[in-house]
Image (tube, rainbow, N blue to C red; front, top):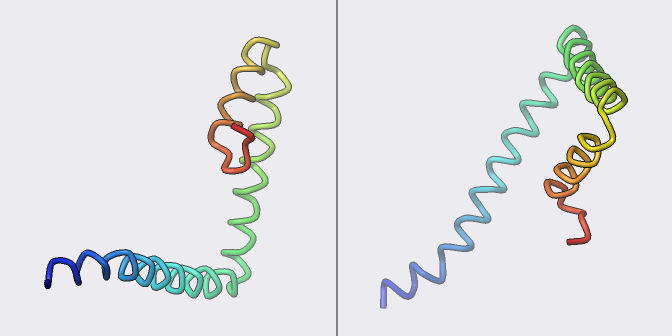
Length: 81
């Protein structure tokens, strides 16, 4: 019977673990974003990454652009497939 009890408890324990990790990471990010320099560095890194991907997308040929678009769609949790 202990096996069945443990088997039924496992999903709930996993959800609690994920929630604890999320809570800890949210606190760390909030604390990090409270520092002005860290916020500027993180925002700059995000902007540089987005700009880099836009430049790559603009200068790709049509065939490679289609491949990149399909790869991003496959990774997206909102894709239709």
